Image (tube, rainbow, N blue to C red):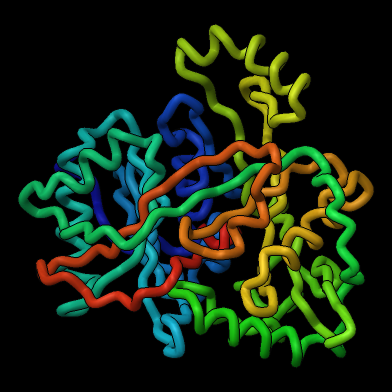
Length: 360
C-alpha cells in the first residue's frame, strides 16, 4: 500500500481503469460489474463535461483504486452552476478499503476541492456497506449531507395503452428550439437537471451515443407537449451480471417463473450483459405525467425498444414519477448526498431532485 501512487489518471491509463471497473463489482444481493471499454473516459465525458479521475496505481501500472470527481453543469432551479459529481468508486480487493478511502479523501481535500466546495453523489440503498462506511463520519472522511432519495426503474415489457390522443413522432432539427425551451422551463422546477444543451446531440462528448433521431416527440393542438430520448450507451458503457447473493441465487428460478407469469423483469443469468437503454433527456409540459405515460406507451413497443431494457430514474418527489404507476418494473432506490469537507450544511432549494439516469 505504501508504494501505491495516487494521482489524476490520464488517457493512457484507460485500459488499467477499465480493468479495475470490471473487476470490482458493486455489491448487494445482485452484484453488477461495470464495463467501460474500449475507452474508459468516454463514459466519464457523459457523466461530467470536465472529467477528473483520481486513481491509485501499483508500480506495474495496475489501477488498484479510483473515483471520479469531475465537474458538470446543472440547473439548480432558475440558476445554473458547475458542480462536482463523485462517482465510480472502485477498490481492488487486494488493498485495505479503509486505508484507501482515507488516502483518497485526503487527496480530494488537499488537491481537488476548493475551500467550501460541495459535490453531489448517489449511493444505492442496497449497497449498505458503502452507505455505512462513507457516511460514518470517521476522521478524514467528508460530510455526507442528505439531499433526497432517487429511484431507478427497469422496464422490459410494453406499457399498456391509456388511449392518449397525443401524437408521437421522431424529433427533427426544426424541433430543437422548442425542445430546448421546454427543457429549461421544466429544469427550473427541479434541482440537478443537466445543463448540457441539446444542440450538442450527435457531436459533443456529453451526448455520446445519442442522436436527434433517438428522441421521440409528443404533440397536441398546442404544439410540443413533451419529449423523451432512448439513449443507448452499449458502445462505451455496459452493465454485466457478476453474481447473486446465496439466498437470491437459490430462489432465482422461482423468481423468474413469477416474472413470466406477472410480466415482470426476470433475473438474468450470471455473466449476461444487460441490454440497457436509458430514458432521457426528457421534459413534459407542466410536468404532466400523462404526457410521459403516452411517450412510455410508444417507446416500449416491441418494434421501438427491440428487446432492450428501458432504464429510467427520478427523484421520489418528481411529479413525473407517477407516470410509472401500475407499470411492472424493477425499482432500485438510492440516497443522494452533497459531500464536502467544511462541515456546514449547504442551502438547498425546496425542489424535486433531478438526475439524468444516463449520467449516473
